[in-house]
Image (cartoon, rainbow, N blue to C red; front, side, top):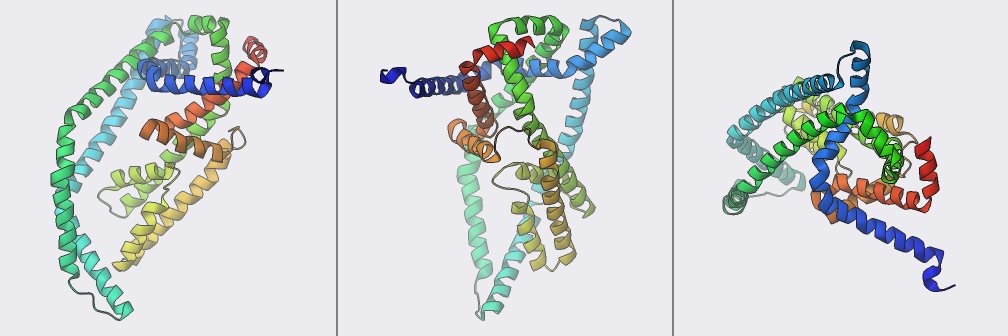
Length: 355
């Protein structure tokens, strides 16, 4: 047997080809078809609801589909408006109080220097002047580097916002159209060879990737709500912004809530606010417990891939795709594995789609 006829060479070549195909698809094809994928996902999620309403009322599917999509869109839009409005108000208040916050940080810096000096038995001089120098460097860097960069790329940011609005609009319209003809489109898809493969990947995605993604989104929402409620009870003026930020940090595999709450606790202890520090400590413990409690129950053994593989796919995705690799990395890894197994066993894919 020649070397290129060996099984391991064939498998390696197939795996490399699938990896290249997935990478090129994610890099070039995905941006073009993303609105329609979102529309298909929207149609798939709303199809059971629309089907029940059509069966009970006997009305046309087109009318019911349009009404359901518009109601969902109105509810989501209202929630986003209220959350966005509150977040913008808190962000404006944060910018307005930036000078007062700088004074607080300055007082904390000097207090830390004084305490460190007493503990070490030395005198730390010119702590205030050192802070002013650092503050001046930060302001100068912001004015000379950060601000010009933001102004230079302002058109790119505006373009990204309009692009997002366009993608959302096309997604909603395509979702409405797909939902109208969902039964016929689904039947036609299942009869094609590509559709059979897509059905197989979809079923595995629901069992593995879908379970993981839904679990992480639910945990993010729960932890964000806990942080927002806890910070609101402490009288924090930026509870919504801080709570959402901490929840997002908890969702990232390399950060977590401890990165925020532990330094916050130390700062409050240094300031003599022991009750506030205890509250932050309790919030940290509660958030950690919630993640440890919910994650195994929501995911359990249904993931199908070890957590280290998911972490590796995120790490590799960030290096390959950039910031979007946090999402595209696991999706790419999942597609590569599923396509590799499916193309090795095409007969099983056909049997599965028929069942």
